[in-house]
Length: 277
Image 1: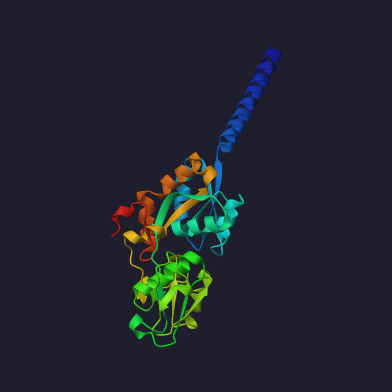
Image 2: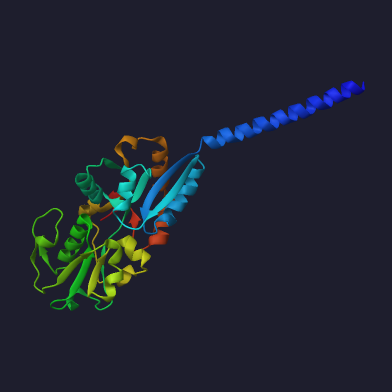
C-alpha cells in the first residue's frame, strides 16, 4: 500500500513536471514566431512609429526603430541589410538615390506629405528680402531642387526647366541673393547666420519652428505627389507579409489622427492623396 502511494506521488510529480516543460516549450515556440523588423528614420518620426509598433506587436511583429542623423545613412543601411525598411524619404529622393548609387530600393506604401517652408528670424515676408541677403537650402539634390522651386514659387528667383534644379539652374536673381546649400539638418541651425532658410518639415519640427510663422510655405497640389514620403524596402523583400502588415497598420485612422496631433501644421497623412487640393 505504501509503495502504491509512493508510486502515485512519483507519477504525479513526473506528470506535473512534464506539463511544465511542455508549457515552457510552447511559450518558446510561440515567442520564436515573432518577427523583428528594423526600420530606419531620421529626426523624431518615432512618435508615430511607436503607435505603429504597438499595433503590429499584436500580430507577432517587433518593430525596432533605428535613428539616423542625416539623409545619407538610411538608404545605405537598407541596401547593406543593416535595417529592413526605412521611412524618411520622398519618392523623388528615392529615385535619385537609386540612380546615383545603383541600388534597387522601392516604395511599399506612402506615409505623409510634408511641406517645406522658408523660415527666418529677421523677416516676416519675402517682400522684406534685401539685395545680397543670404538664404540657406538643403544640399542633397532632390531637396535642394525642391527648395529652389519653393523660392521660385515665392517669386524671389526664376529657374530654367530642369526637372530637379540646382543652383546653376537659376536664370534670374534680381536681388542677388546669396543662396548656399547646407546639410539638411543644419538649415534650421543656420537661421542666426542667414536672412532666411528653407527647412524640411522634420528638421523644422525637431527645431520647434512654428509652421504658422513661416515666411513662406510650399503649396500642396497635384504636382506635389513626387514629394510624398514613403516606407521603403529592398525590391527583393517588398512582398514580405510582415512588411505589408506594417504598411497596413501605418495607413490606419488612428495613425492618421496621431499624425495630425503630433505634427499638426508640419505633416498630413498621404495615403489618401486624392483628398489633397
